[in-house]
Amino acid sequence: MYSVLGKTPLDALINIVLHPIENFKIMFINHNNSLFGDYVKIETHIILLLSGVFMLFIKPQYLLILIPIYGQKFFHDNYLMWSVGGQYSIEFAPIMAIWIFTVISEFKNIKLKNIIAIIVLIGCLASTIRIMDHTVFFTNKSAIRFYKEAHYKRNYDVKNVHNQLSLIPKNAKVSAQTVFVPHLALRNNIYQFPIIKDAEYVVFSTKESSYPLNESDFFKEINMLLNSEIWETKYKNEHFTILKKICL
Image (tube, rainbow, N blue to C red; front, side, top):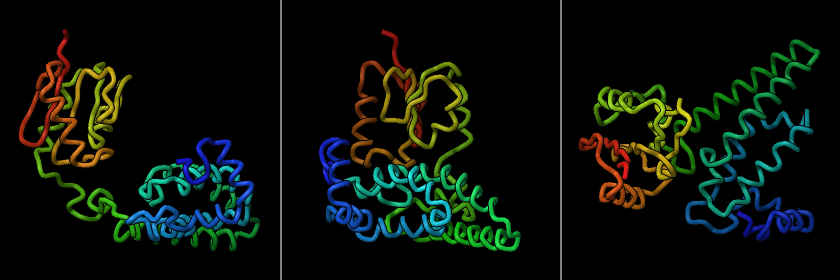
């Protein structure tokens, strides 16, 4: 992350102080000429403005909280991080929710308060539609278009998957593919695959997104597990697999 600003956080801080104009430009441009990086930052800035960042002009002190998040996101060398759906975007949400409603509540003029609230709601609706229907950077539309039938369907037997997940002991340590983590999260130890650590079970499906791995690395990881001597197949069909660690 720090190659643009320096190799360490201290180098980055010094670079920002000494070269403010150049670093401000980096917030908006494809600074490392990534193949698919053009306009990704611009789109994210527009979405943030529509979602209510413009309110910082009324309460600029909240900008101090957002500066580190902006830095993490837009100075990163990986263009995936710059996108509206990329890493660190979720960190804007709680700050903006608190800040926007705090600012609106402090308006004395009821009419003005209502107008600002409506503008924010329209902006949020517009940005939501934009993200669901068209973005510069690819997003999995079926995962977010709640008004589409595809959002509620899977190309495998979901009921069977839920049944198999329910058979995993509640106190077991589990490493699961992203989509299965929420269904297994109410336990002391849950990891997002491919992080395994001390997990006793591994859960994955070839029909789901391979995130955070690319597809090639995902299949390498699962093939290593399937061929390993320390994992046995607890359940498997053509789309879904549960592995259990063998007690040696």
